[in-house]
Figure 1: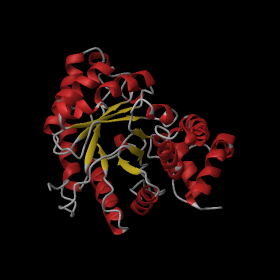
Figure 2 (figure 1 turned 90 degrees about the vertical axis):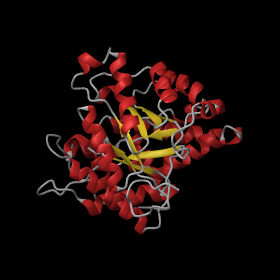
Figure 3 (figure 1 turned 135 degrees about the horizontal axis):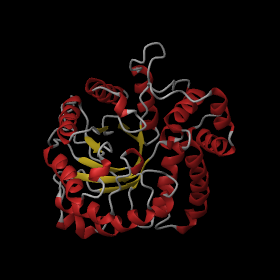
Figure 4 (figure 1 turned 120 degrees about the horizontal axis):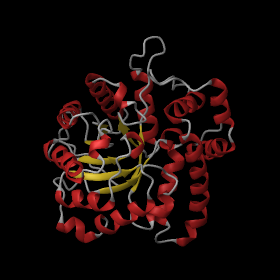
Amino acid sequence: MAPNGTNGNHHLVRGLKAGIYAPIPTFFLPDNEELDLPSFEGHVVRVAKAGVWPLLSGSMGEAHHLSHSERSALIRAARKALDATGLTDVPVIAGVGAGATREVIELSREAAEAGADATIAILSGYYAGALASDRKALKAFWTEVAEKSPLPVIIYNYPGAAGGIDLDSELITELASESPNLAGVKLTCGNVGKLTRVCATVSEASFADQFPRKNAAFPFLVLGGFVDFLLPSAFVNAHGAITGLGNVAPYTLAKLYTLSEAALADPSVLPEARRLQAIASRADATIAKAGVAGTKFLLEKLYGYGGAPRRPLHAIDTGAGEKLFAHPDTRALVAVERELSGKSQ
């Protein structure tokens, strides 16, 4: 089998599959804002043991606050930590968002060298005024990145972080059909109709036969960017979610995904799936409003690490953080997470 990058396990091809992925925060030392790799490594292993797979250097990971060398260091640290705990089959997705197309490709090559298994790319919103309505330019960006990347590429559609650039379902399905190195799309636009339309094409068995991937271990996955519609998305053959809530409650979201898939064949599990979906949906809406700083505050409260974002982002005000932790939506989620993870504290 072909290797995934140069990660020291050349016999392994760590493909991607349907499920829950967490965009891992990047942790920093309080005195100098250098990378806090021990906390980072511990967190990657924590979520992976719950059945949630890591995505590094995304929006939650403060990618635009990181140098190229820091992004590579995070990939190497995650791979080392996963391998050291026997999680050698867990893939690592690396964010490669940047300004120019050539830099995105450069980051893709560096990610492969550091040991990543796949990448996720967002188009910079700096020139959104010129790009948002230029369908040719939008298509050319992901086509070139996919063609020149040594690793499979996930499309990251997040208008809020891309100056309002929002790919429509037709363009996404065109890209999926024409670029065999594309391995999926993350829809942080939150558009359930778009997700349904994309799935109606790419989730059909005939799609894989007609448009095979460059590497069969990386099918084209349709992933929500929030977890608040995970259960209904299962019924249109979506493939899970990449969600920041997976950092706070990985066991809960892994269980919700399992129940959502099981409900397709066994309606008797629907009531429990709906119960967990309601808890996750409320918590997702509440916690997402607090952004990166809010998630880090919750991790500090729950697990003893988190810290502040890198400037210019600031830590959440202590009072606001405590209010977030005490919010009924957060408390309901934490109660379920503690039950499922076997922890009472």
